[in-house]
View 1 (cartoon, rainbow, N blue to C red):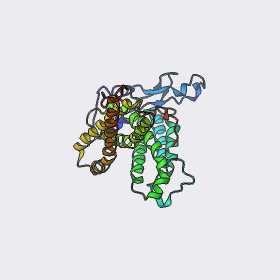
View 2: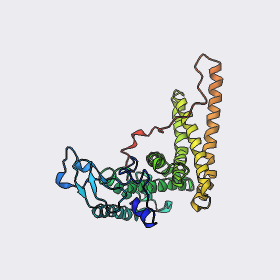
View 3: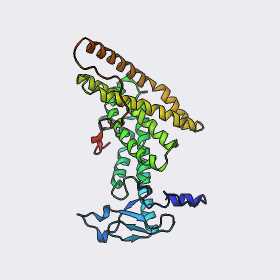
View 4: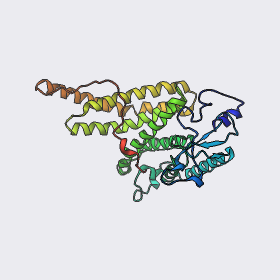
Length: 321
């Protein structure tokens, strides 16, 4: 797929990525073995990887890393086309959030209200099964889901109070799922397009926005637990603020893009989420410091070194939206 796109622009590249069968270990074009003759339900040959024999050759054959069977390039490309068409068909059910038409009785997740359930279901049918979980088709499908979920969450804030109360319970799960997808996509993008790439900036933007939804919830939980794990929260909050700055910095290079202007404008509007939380954190830190100075209890650290935050959502792999 990448070689075809380069060839269309008369670009003949032999960089490390182009000459790598698995694209620097990302498996961005890797499909799963489709040799039914050697399919073993136990060993799972069908779950083995099908890689191009000559990565820089447009007509290269593809060979399975397990059963060593080979498939013609045309067969593999037709296979990819079919999967793409399935996802495009599923996109037809996706809509914008129209609260006057929402059916809360049947909805279980924000994805239901956005018509995303079918699209997510089709993506999961192919993710790690017919194609590698990092395949470009899955990558772009996840980016599409991230945008729809974050835009849907943003729309919630513009709804009237009565409707917002009905839908607010859907927001947290959607934000956590979007953060999980952002992490998966950023892990791939950081290898294939390192630096100040637009797509990286966009993913970081969506992640920091969703963290702005989740962090206040984490803060309340830590307060209710007596502040035992507040150090973890402080680190998470600092990481989120750094992501916010990084997103603004990267996107500033693409000001000629109308979508970027909208994102930066919205970052100004949703600053209230972070500023309000910052005030609550400062107030709690001050009260904790005052109480700890008058007792023998251990003072709660207010600042901490930066670490990666998992957002408490490591167990969301099986979440169905």
